[in-house]
Image (cartoon, rainbow, N blue to C red; front, side, top):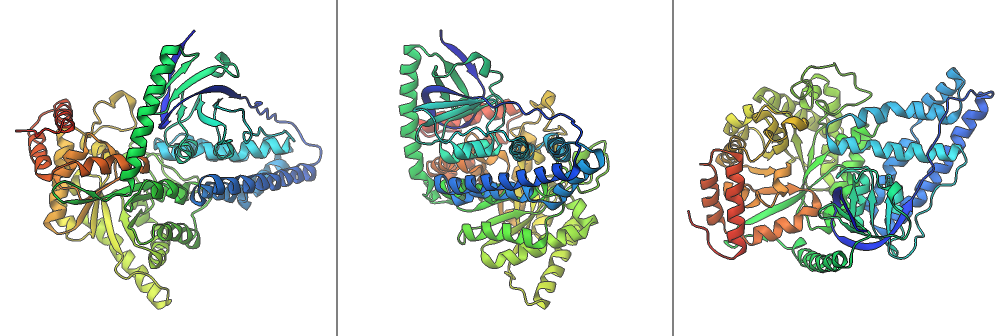
Length: 581
């Protein structure tokens, strides 16, 4: 009998196939005493070496199946695996507590996964899964367990698992896999990112489902909506085939837009950029036709390390992205740690209101060695591509001026050291706080460019914690006050002749695109997968009509009224009619 359930659609597409249950034996790690410390330490090292061999093989497979950029995910895994501080810490636990290697390893890595899993930032929280992937494989190798192989699956398989690690996803038999479902997971996990790169329909966060399924059952998954149908009826299969045909035609059409310029009907050219968290995201950026990168979150580089990344480590990461983008703009945000993002190696105070506390640029201006190292790495990388540097969480001109002074000092250091960099490298800033919006023109006279972070701007404008589910309806970027703040920022930038972009979630929302275009936004930056649709939308718009829409929207009183007006505009626009006000 047909059963319908739903989860989170993280990779678009529709598939009908047969269930393949990926059942992994649970890892049991007991606090067993060890009789021979040296022997346990030897087991730990040998298992690490075996794990590295496996990851190198997976990396090679990923480079062939997906791209060199996505294979870089496993470089980060290998870097952590080879971290000598971690190995020393685990060896010390073995020696001091006289426990077995697998228990010592589980204790040694627990602190990092706990910190990451508790942050509110979804992207960084999902990184805990990467650490679990590494430790899971390492522990299984210590215990001598055979690791499940998903590289050879039955035809038309839809893999169903408690969770899929990035290495599981990379190893999937693409000839026979139609998609996958996991009981847990989120939109920004590397597994979800990999699924999108592989163009495999995927649904995660479905809840407990393994116990209710058997191998070879027919199953339908819709990665667009998160819908899953178990033992579908003939009517459901027919409906699914129709939806699949429509989706495949739409995707083929959108691929045509990926590499087109986003030029509106009236001839206005808009740049459509991508947001990334690491060099590993570059495959999707290039595939979806991004005109550049509007936000490179460098937090991941700091979060995956067990100490502050060195100038050389940072330089290599930034250079990799700059070179891959072949002269297109790469906007790199300096370290945005604090608030809901923590570093295990940075002593941070317990704060009543961390979102309003010691975070981002505030940390860097107190501990200037952090920002100096990052500035030097960014400047050096600027010799290899069109890099722009962006400062987060600014509330005063004093902060901007202090950061600029350090930036200029770093330039002078590199000149004295005869190290090449782009002397015209732009230093811009995020628009995230009302204090900046109120004085946008003054900031625009001293910053080289603006980028609106709508997630924080909404939170601070509406005094509503964006991570608090109880007040999610309050923290709405369509609130008229937020829209007025966006207009003030755009007007302030244009009054002083600087470019303004948006890298918050609103930029990739099709409902908002006509409004933002009408308000005068220069650059839209979003998740790479949204780029073709946004380009298609912009190409269909007329600026004068969108300006009238924006003027109308700014007279409305509530977020619901705003969204209703935007929906009305899109409905009329899709019919090819002209909207009148």
